[in-house]
Image 1 (cartoon, one colour):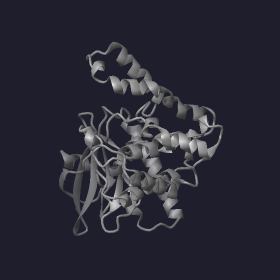
Image 2 (cartoon, rainbow, N blue to C red):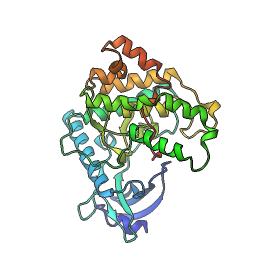
Image 3 (tube, rainbow, N blue to C red):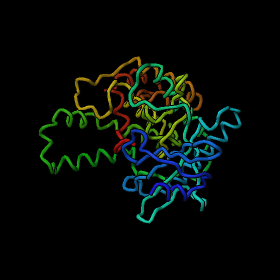
Image 4 (tube, one colour):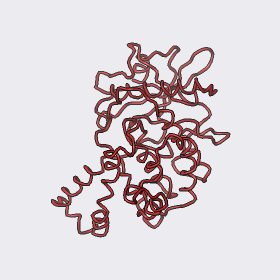
Length: 332
């Protein structure tokens, strides 16, 4: 089956083999080898989960536009080794970003980034810095991304007010009789419900811009050089769409500040490591700092009469900070 799918793409050479690849939970991913020019050339083949992403052609249109824009930026800046600095979409023989098989599944092919790997959990503050630096660079390079707007691949992905409304509807009916087992958590959410209106309010007031953001800034969505440890590029671009810089920094904090897997069920193992927070803050600002507005840097300003010191203090007192940034519906 894999060979027949690979044959639909603009790949010269003879199919050799394929094996499952990576640790993603949404799309099926394979490392495919094609024999060409006396050697085997690797590619990444993925089946796009159309149960999660309902418009795969639109998703791939986003990916092609974004990766081409980043590539042009890197070329202008004369950055070497472009094949390792941005994913490249291999088009189908019909010139599209994905192939729909007879069973209705959508497939795409990307270049394989050599000499690099991903990490599911952090081993050091240096890794945290490099990951944040890569995500900040991604945001910075898309600062002047031209219209039209990208497709919203998961509608309402970071819509906090909607999630709060949905939560309250479920809480009211309590269909599985679970509310009684989560009273402290429910009370916490209710007590801090106003946080869900902070970011939409800042957008409405024109204090923070809607940007092109990644929206799923987990540590394992950065390719890291196996020898130097440098964060080379950002991958898993399915959720790239209009968003806020706070989404990207907030989700990065949520998934990196505790030295555990994000789905860890033993709460005693979960803690916030402030050295990791300092590392991701420095890394993110080292590349994205120049494009961020004053209010993007200090989210608490909205309630602090534009006093940056007081705004910073409010931000630092926010419970877990991550309350501003809602979880995504499943990792990828």
